[in-house]
Length: 174
Image 1: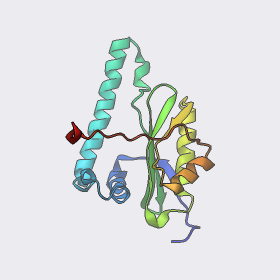
Image 2: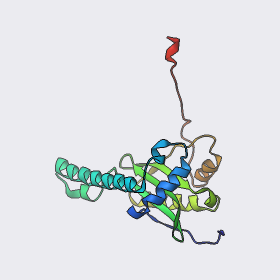
Image 3: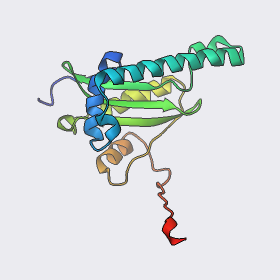
Image 4: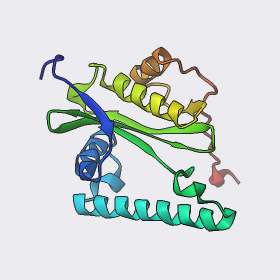
């Protein structure tokens, strides 16, 4: 596969879920939650999330006496995929945590397609989408040793806001 092959960035479709699952398995190979999921189970989870989203929207319409919630909801996710020919080679997903702040939930590109600008294309599309939806800030969490991701985010204008803190309590010492 050459660098000249065209990569299309588009919104996620339900039919993309089996390929997204495979990308996620590669991205998180030791996570047993992903290894156990079949394509049909993934589709049923997606459909359940869609149902829950619409049930939540209708509930908010009733609760706040406004039909505006049929058009938007803070639980709406934005998921974009990178497609080369008929193969999905990456995805990025974010969701709003309030009216103005979005959280980057995941970004993954298959190993054979990394370092070709696909992550940048996915992030650029996601950033544009969030801006059009009224988002003013995007937060993300990245491991300190993930230098490639840190470099990408820095080039896109992200800056370090805080260092992650990990704490433990040893109960055997009490």
